[in-house]
Image (cartoon, rainbow, N blue to C red; front, side, top):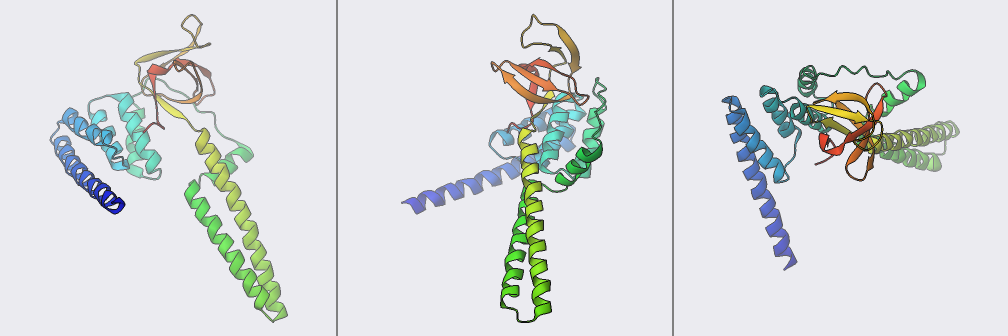
Length: 253
């Protein structure tokens, strides 16, 4: 009975995937024909069925860009970039979309040791760092076994030294893996969808307005208050409170 259920679920998944591919091609045809809003409807229906991909987000970003819809265009390019961070087409189109935004926010540059550490940590994602650590751990075990069963004194010294170099590299790589995981876990970006948002000094409408932000600007969510307000930080270091309805978190599926 269980086997039949698994087969049914598997076949249902295959059918859903095939239908999504057909719909995706239909969306592409509409996009190429200049029917951007119709293409968006097709793409978003696929997303609503749980099919997510960098290509889907990229096409949505392009369609919204053609309609001069700044916020959703940037939002979907950012989503695509999270899945394919080294894709040049996504990076370039995101840069074009960002040029349409009103706010010119100068990012505070990373300097010194902090900058070096982050550049190393982001060389690979968490999965790649984890794979490297597994590789070095296997190298350590193999080299140590070769050392243990070796009879040559010179060979034993070389294998002993090599095994503990592998162990040291495994520890270092694990450190970078967990640093990468920690940074990604605390990374909670969002895009402003409201045409203009008042950033408040406190999480209520009666408080003073610290500054204004406009659609398409990217912010970091620091904390939530009563599910209605989010404390945000922008690239130049300024912080404040924004109505949660004005933003759309990028980490949402």
